[in-house]
Image (cartoon, rainbow, N blue to C red; front, side, top):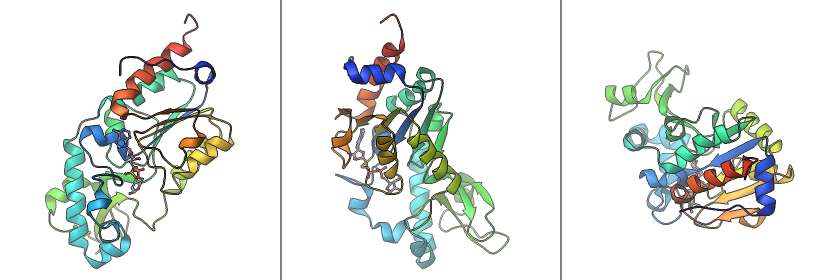
Length: 255
Ligand code: APR
């Protein structure tokens, strides 16, 4: 996308914003070659989450779950951040007073693009932990040591990917900080998420209730599209660099 101009009210809200939340989902990594979960070609269109991403699935067939996450780890490791990730990282300098990236993604691409203030609501695929003593290790090393099934810990437990599975609670401190940020922000940018998985999607409601300016970037509509002050129905990698430019311009007094 060449350039993008923000309209009066949104431009004014962006110009005066002091506390900013960027909320991201799988769509932000689509242009890095990683699958989304829902929608055309999504992982859950082809695979059954109850057989791969639940504690019950890990108990029933640990090797199957481990191999699947090893496959996803390889994909995430071979992927590169795309212009959307880089634009998000850049926004930290556009909004120096306070900006946090709250992501549902476990792929580590926001960090690799340079985002520093990051909350990973659904954990990370880059680490593994023992399901009995909690000891952690690098996922790549765990897979190298045991590609076909989850490594056994010295305590007798099994290592599993450090992601949040369906039916599990989100990391308490991370969720609390994300809720605090959404409830006190004045600009909330939602990128590449279907906004259907809770409690994460509840952050949009918190930001709305806080009176924040809401912006959504997603080629497809979501259940919250009607609440948005600005909706950009385009791929994040195409539109976020232009949006970051427009935001930067709106914050320079001369323009
Ligand atoms: N740019 C922006 N958005 C995109 C792009 C793109 N290039 N490509 C697809 N999308 C949008 C889709 O339209 C969809 O609305 O990204 C969204 C991806 O939605 P989901 O696949 O549901 O992913 P997400 O919202 O992150 O899922 C939430 O569900 O399966 C669990 O734990 C998993 O964190 C995940 C959670």
